[in-house]
Length: 257
Image 1 (cartoon, rainbow, N blue to C red):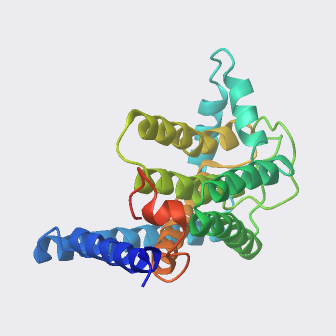
Image 2 (cartoon, helix red, strand yellow):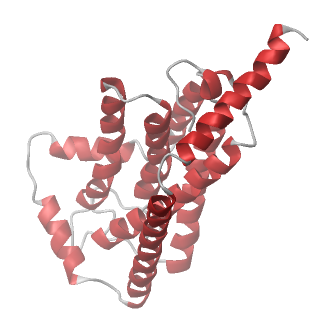
Image 3 (cartoon, rainbow, N blue to C red):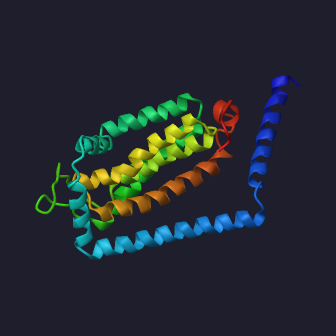
């Protein structure tokens, strides 16, 4: 039997041992506590989104939405308006498709084939869920009669597609960075660069007058659920597909996700 033939099973066994060791590193009660806590948080997020969706569907408008919009639109820091516009501009087509394609191709080029596939899934899944809920709720967008509106959009308002996309797609990219890179300044900087647009896109959508604060809140709630679902599917598929890819499985400096 050749050395290469023996090497692959040995590497696979080592990877499986590392996975088992990592899974068993915490005591069983601690693992159960973490699992229950995580599931409880997801349930609370789902309930909060359900309650907010019901209110949005049954109530034409919220006074607090108008107050928040006016407060955000009153911000006049230098270049703040330009930054808010650019942040939202990147989420419209066709530029969003170009940016997404570049990121996915970069991930694929690094040898992370399953990660690239799941990045595409994250982008499509978050967009599809957003469009589905938009059509179900059919909430009108803010109008120029009550707030300052940069550009009038014809699509529905709840939830924000920008926020869900940034959280679903960039959030998944952030998860990959955190999982596959060892703790380092590079990883920290990448996480910060990814986190800034995810956090600020909600403010941008309100500042431009194209969404209410409740739209943004609903987007973060639903986007969190879609992101968790994407990550769980990624982890499930990681043990079944692309297990022999050179970088993700055995590359130097990478950690099994």
